[in-house]
Image (cartoon, rainbow, N blue to C red; front, side, top):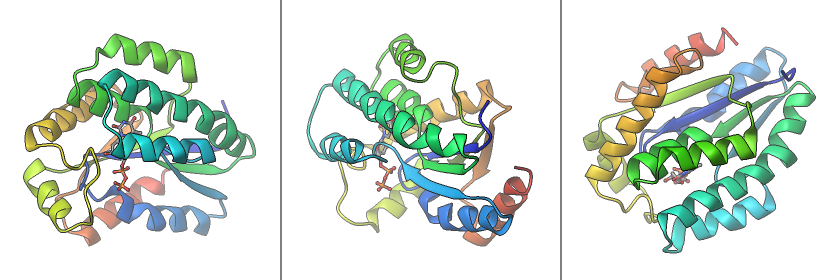
Amino acid sequence: MTPGKFITLEGIDGAGKSTHIPDIANALRGRGKEVLITREPGGTALGEKLRELLLHEPMHAETETLLMFAARREHLEQVIRPALQRGACVISDRFTDASFAYQCGGRGVAADKVEQLERWVQGDFQPDLTLLFDVPVAISTQRLVAARDPDRFERERGEFFDCVRRAYLERAARFPQRFRVIDASKPLTEVKVLLDKIIATI
Ligand code: TYD
């Protein structure tokens, strides 16, 4: 157990999770907590270089999985664990649930391979709270169309995101003690009210 809290945000591309990060951070800071905002893949100098490759370079699904965990290894040791040790709240825009959702659910990589990597890279370490921004693919696709240049993941078809979404919901059902599923098709103000309530319990 570490003194800080590890909060992860998950959801399919276009679910809108990143929009809420500043508000979540401000709510925690308002309660006197140190907050560190980070993201995956990324979060370290090496991790950001791996992110560039992961988002733009064509590669085998298992190579993609291995690079996600290589970036995560650095991120955990250099950034996440030290911050938690000093009592900070760490908010990460995605973490290992994304590997189960995208690489297993979306790309079809065997779950036992990802479980092995999870055990290797993080042992028993898990987020204290995972906010899953859940939205039907038809809505997330509309949001993505309005967004900038799509990356390798954002260019995937609707069926890919249906599988990713289903895998996320399965994770949430399997680990109900740390997951909170948020209906991200609701208006932003309603989502914010719900998030404030959840954050107040941390
Ligand atoms: P994302 O977090 O959506 O950032 P942005 O909002 O800037 O596009 O992009 C990261 C992408 O990486 C996203 O499409 C999901 C993917 N990803 C995985 O496939 N597996 C993982 O383990 C992680 C952390 C991310």
